[in-house]
Length: 191
Image 1 (tube, rainbow, N blue to C red):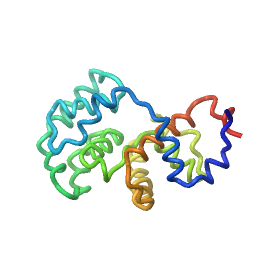
Image 2: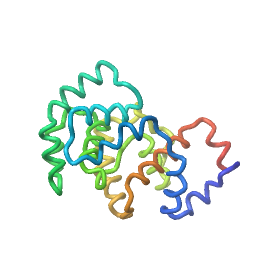
Image 3: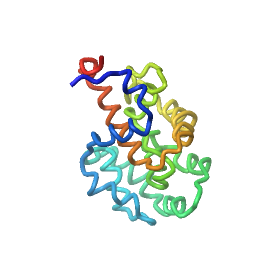
Image 4: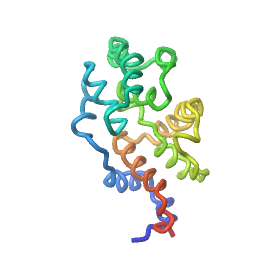
């Protein structure tokens, strides 16, 4: 089945999200990600959420980073989680030593209905939607600083501006379409 690229670009965002979120698939979603809805995290919740984000068991270095830079600050995380609004400056300062993707994911876990997930697939789709060059987006081509700037200066304002009520579906749709764009054979499916 061929997909007409013009149809995708002309489709309204709600239809796009509805369609592509159905194609989303990620391992251990039910087992691990559901902890995100808890009002107060336990250490195991943080562990499971990062295993889910990683898509597999964490390497030794990632586990050490998780233990020292995130799980060690469980009280601070739960304090941020208990507030209606997050002081982003305080959050960024507290977690300045985290990679951009892990920092943004932590922000998402604290307020999942306000802060969407970020990864290379999300970045790629945003650029695609905005008719910008998305073809070279990968974890290796964008620095941590660029990822954070993109998220806070471009992506987050975009998400707020569209006022889409279900960020989980938005994340799923962008992830699925971003993976699709990243496949080697996507051009064969696009006219």
